[in-house]
Image (cartoon, rainbow, N blue to C red; front, side, top):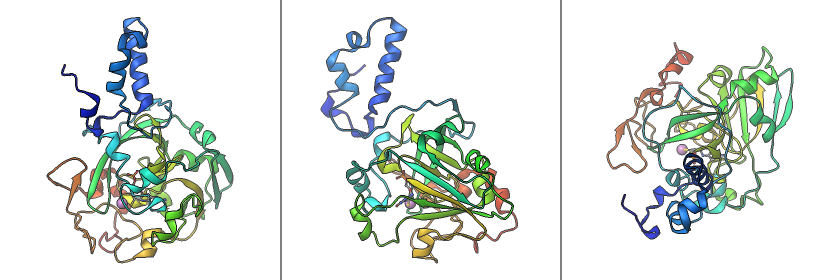
Length: 319
Ligand SMILES: Nc1nc2c(c(=O)[nH]1)N[C@H]1C(S)=C(S)[C@@H](COP(=O)(O)O)O[C@H]1N2
Ligand SMILES: [Mo]
């Protein structure tokens, strides 16, 4: 094996600290020696360079998911340093820089509206509701880039069942945390905050819709929407709302931030659709972060199993 000096390791190979620690434990167990003695200080540095990595703590992942793609996972460092989280600035590098001190504990999520059992859950309670799965999903931003991320969470439907939606409930409205004090760049973003999003109830019930607590086996970094967010792999990235604080079951289609900001550009549904171009961004192709050639974008981002949700709908009209 070629031993590289720390300074030569590209940032894309940086490993989250807990992952690295875990590997050490595994090696120690397998070889029956202490990890410290086995690896030594210099090798430790090789796997864990001095560069600061915003990794959270490890999550107990009970299962891998059959929904996972086998495509190559995007390096952790790319996924955590190329973000859209406008509460923390509008440049892709801003959230990694300015969300560092975001306070995500204690945290609770209020679930209310047209439900029989409204309840405010702490994040810890939410994490216990169902077994955590790893789901490796493609994630397509409307701007034309895409990533492959091993998220950790469970189907959002598990939470809905817990609160018992009433028959009148037809949509789910989501709201992100917002604090001008903690998010001073938010007022310069040019969008109305708090960030809000919505789904039709049957979309929210689809098993692919993920209530997400982590990525790469650990808790979510702040810039990726800590401590809890949605991940909707068949929709453009902006539907996957970060740092959730409110979930309300409602009768009418709720407002959605980008749809409010620019209705001709961003529809309520915003399913990935290579046949419907955005007035600003063509949707036919996408660039996977780290790759040079663009690849064709797939209908529903390749998640054909959601097609039945939209049967009979004109997807050019309901874009
Ligand atoms: N609250 C909030 N949620 C948000 C956004 C945002 O600005 N604020 N950006 C969205 C967009 S445009 C994308 S592409 C994804 C990016 O998620 P990632 O940074 O974890 O890749 O988050 C979505 N969720
Ligand atoms: Mo996006």
